[in-house]
Amino acid sequence: YTQEIQNYVSSLSKYKVVWKNYDQTTLETDSGVIGGTNAQYNGKTPTKPDSNGNTYIFAGWATSANGTPMAIKDLPIITKDTTFYAIFTTKKIVQTSLGYIDASTTLSEEEQAEVDEILFENTINYKDTL
Image (cartoon, rainbow, N blue to C red; front, side, top):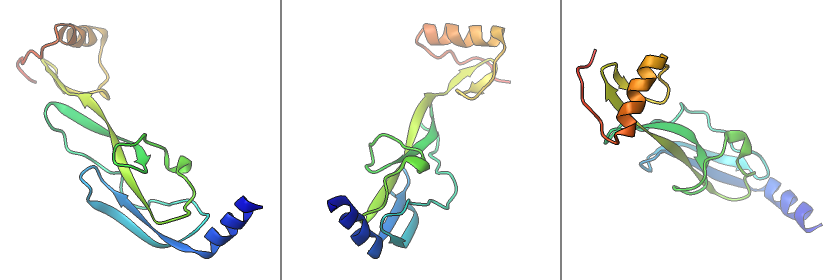
């Protein structure tokens, strides 16, 4: 009965859910979220600018700034005021004769061989860009 009582009490309460980006800026604040329900983010997909030769891809939300990302459908049910943090994966940007490429770039076998050689050498060779 204890869990049922907690669920019932939570359903009578309303909470604040805050959605934060990588730099702690608030993307969305939801007030009056009914306890026992799932959080709903209604904003645009969070982004993080490229820096230091890296590109960042939104991976999901976490309950701590350095937490493990979860899909929105897997977030915990709201039972208290909660803050969710946008989590990003880091991908190296490689400059080749093909121009800048990242993990989402589709390459031919020949292009992939060039990239593999650059990565294997563990250096980035700056060649003429397209």
